[in-house]
Length: 421
Image 1 (cartoon, helix red, strand yellow):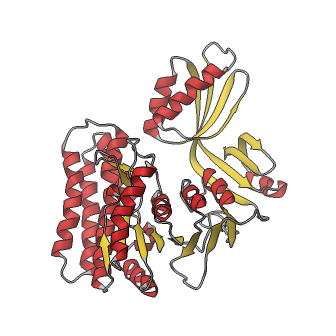
Image 2 (tube, rainbow, N blue to C red):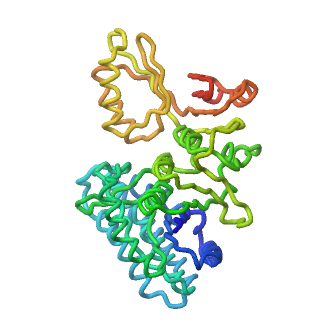
Image 3 (tube, rainbow, N blue to C red):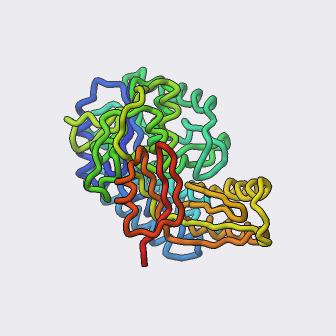
């Protein structure tokens, strides 16, 4: 049994969805669970809906209507008769429309999960109908009834025992009947049936959870790149594919922000020794990159750029020494607001922290710190991480930039920098 995960780029339009059916035609005899993301940029679009609604902008409803209309266009292009499918799709959007019609009574993160999750639910309904039209035996399952989390919205923590039980009872009987399972990535549910999500780009993690719970032979993440690259090929023409890498190296890369796989994907696979393959859906002749329990190999410099970051320079109001008590207070605030610290350095009287820019979270953080700390905000900055760096690569990638913060260890260099004015 294998788990295949398909990202939004693999189902970006009707032609891509038809190509997906052609790809899957090569695996008709396999026992598969298909984990599907939202289509193309749908998650980004739905995030904009949440932002508009949160700001009280009436444009949220219009934006949602355009997203629904686009999905209807895809349905019309794929199916001659689509009345039943359109009704299913419409019902899913109605849930978000009801939210937008009401006044805000919940937290931003709760609303985010309820609205953004619609992208995956809609895409998988379309994929299920397309597969059935092409004579694939498959059944749609709601991932919110399979993957159980706590109520930590936008970054749900998995209840592994409940999840194993749900996946075992929900998926295995279907596979035993020679049906494929079509389900969603990224989304999950609480014990009270409230929608949660697993973190941005969390579909990879969903596939790993399901693969680990079912003791899959392999998990494959189908991407629009040849495999795991030494840098983002969109911004680095010298990026090369890594043919093989260890679980440990993959964990390190994702920890530092490499976006080809979700940071929490590797751990459940490592525990079960399940290999993860990252392959291109555009070139089936390319075996992609294999992540497994290999011994550490020699790696070239692996570069990760995180843009739109914020550097916070925090000091006490009376310029007293930064103590363990101060650090405890600071990180309690970071944790409570879900602010991820990408890099930090502390001195006697200040601490510098690089975090991802989020207007809503940053405003709340600054408000919570103002009574105890003085905070200087520097933005936008870029965080560059180079695994297995050498001096030439470090100099090349920082030339022409103002370096604000730099940390080096034998394996990894991290630099917070900004464009010179």
